[in-house]
Amino acid sequence: MDTPPFSELGLPDTLLAAIETLGYERPSPIQAMSIPPALLGKDLVGLSATGSGKTAAFTLPALAKLDVRQGHPQVLILCPTRELAVQVCEEVHRLGAKMPGLHATPVYGGAPIDRQLRALRSGAQLVVGTPGRLLDHLRRGSFDPSRIQMAILDEADRMLDMGFKDEMDELLAALPAGRQTLFFSATMNPGVSRLIQKFGNSPEIVEIQQKARTVSTVDQSYFEVRQRSKVEVLSRILDMNPPRLGIIFCNTKRSVDECTEDLVNRGYAADRLHGDITQQMRERVLKRFRDGAVEILVATDVAARGLDIDEIDIVFNYDLPTDPEDYVHRIGRTGRAGRSGRAVSFVYGREIYRMQSIERYTRSVVRRERIPSVEQVEGRRADLIFDDLKERLESGKFDAYQDNIDRLLEQGHTPTDIAGALVTMIREASGREGSAIEEDREPERPARRENRDARPPRDDRGPRPDYQDRPDRSERPGPPRGGFQAADGGMTRLFLSLGKTHGVMAKEIVGMLYREAGLPDGCLGRITLFPKHSLVDVPEQFVGQVIDRTRTARLRGRPFRMDVDRGPQERP
Ligand code: AMP
Image (tube, rainbow, N blue to C red; front, side):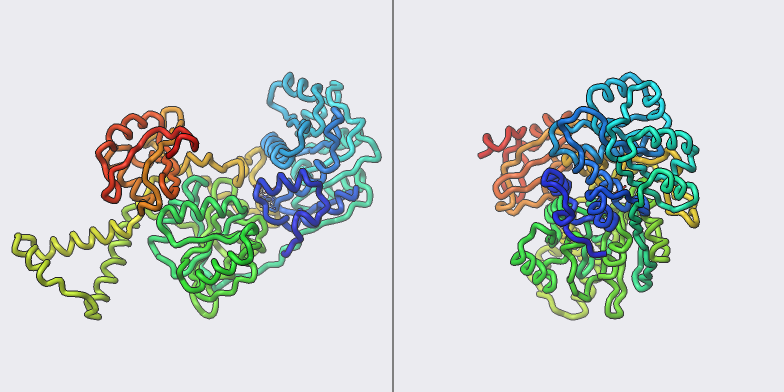
């Protein structure tokens, strides 16, 4: 669904600035449809599944209405579980990051009540809580409902399923009659209708219609992969089957920037498109993509709109889209004009439920795949080299180098050894240094539930994937499970006196460091290349070892200096 930009929804600048920082490029359908009427003060019933962006759909209007100068509860958000209350409160803080004086607090059962009492007494304006504990505070007098202007019921159907009917009734009855109420629910059922009838004021109903779409010509699969290992897995998949052209879809501009940078550092011909790219630049990137000079385009949904290229053989959902329709649009970029196409999605933890919604929406089964091992990738790369070699031999298009080869033969090297050494050199020259992938316990694939949007069981929601799970930049690539672990997780940034202008590539720095400094597999963090220098994140405990052992090492035949980075001022 095409949605208008956030700036057209009537939101104040402070919130638009926070949205910009988060990198949300455009509203999801539930956001586009709920925010304007909610800002007008209307009651609302939002029928939308988990993962559709509904938290921001109610949080944004709530924050727009809130007066940070008033130190009393103004907005109440009811959630079924403690986890959800915490997650919603985190989203409130993210979206309210540019609102100094904002005070939001989660209130839930199973946690000491004192801290909650203090937070409520110290002027919380927005309270997010589970019905039982909130009622407790209401009865104790620690939660003052008298000046609540907006009440939001998140997952109303689930709260009723969990037996919170009486608590909800009592809480809602205690709120001022003139307040605005927003009901969000994945399903409409008699219990939810009763609540709306009793506590709503002619609400507007916003329903995200999910038209079933099929995408039968595209081979769809997904990999379970953590945020921090995405680039490594992406590289392995690309190396296993190098595409002619591929598109990688990300949900935010920031994700596009990071992914592109990582791919370029790893030596791929990648470029990016997102809303901040000028029209002129966009055209240049697209031309290079069409010509094949750029093989991998990293883009947001909006930026890829109107892109009409038939030869795309693979599409990645680097971040799973919030709107299943976007999934259909994204993967529809491949498998065109009678060609075969492949769509690969990265999913982690609770995102599996979003993947299930997508399967239902597209009425197709998305196959789970195993991440190829480094050995498989190496084997495949060798196969590809031998395929090329065979083609070259058969075509006869190569130079003889007779004298040089004769000389090697005279020195006692066998033809097999010479050929083997040559292939190794080609592989090293074209190869990318793989890093370890942090493998976690694999999340169980939940049983399918018919007639309901897929949702995790009660009290079982993990952290949100996109921002909360976003690792610190220096964490990537992560250490392997059971293998290396940084002593306290601390990384130190090292300065290396060679950079892009010296022709250095990230993979060469990685190779040199593992080889020369004898570091354990997978321990290196982020590597950033600048024209004249590079920065490398190394676990604290290996800093001395790295500096000592690389003193006489060379990169691209050049000596270099490696030291703890002392910041931009001290760099040459
Ligand atoms: P929710 O349905 O509220 O659980 O949101 C699902 C995920 O989508 C969360 O990780 C949000 O941070 C993310 N999200 C929400 N709105 C947007 C948007 N407009 N663009 C990109 N990501 C979003």
